[in-house]
Length: 116
Length: 110
Image (tube, rainbow over all chains, first blue to last red; front, top):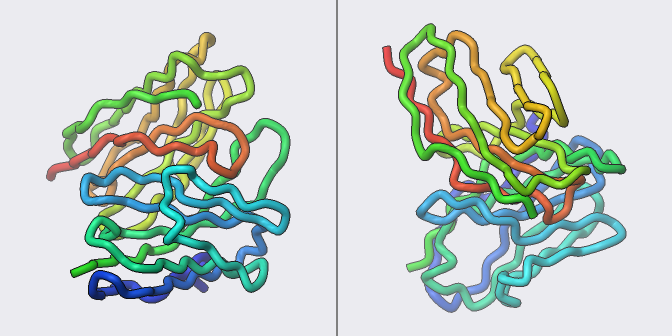
């Protein structure tokens, strides 16, 4: 069984469109994340979210919004897509251990978004 | 956030031991050191995590000196399938504290 899954795997769309990427985790984790990996392979956190708190990376445009219908899902909505949004988007999840220890994050396979 | 510095790339041959060193001079007292591996067209995968001295699992070993300003990921007897990008991360629990640097591209040749 896939631990963290994303759909679609590939997404090609026109500038100005609105699109969504879905993410589901079956690990029972309480925290989920969205990352963006650009053409230079830099992997940057966009959002982290659990039932208590949404933390947004301040560099993320407000055209991007996470939606969590339940604990196992964190979807990414993108409005008014721009050329610069083309990248691979990864969803991840973790179980917060608490204290000082860093949570192990489990990543999905990625969604390659191409904006034309 | 503690910044990390790694070599951009490394080359090795099958069967050799590979050591990738990461510098993190401003690591905080409560920070852990975590390494991830990323294959092309896949998401990063957790390899190992440590706080001090040595940690070993079925995949790799992590060596951390007493001052914790650096760490070394050791991959014993690499194979072609170990060709990937390896990321060193320093931080605390979850949320936005995990920052991925540029990583080290390891190329294993026959």
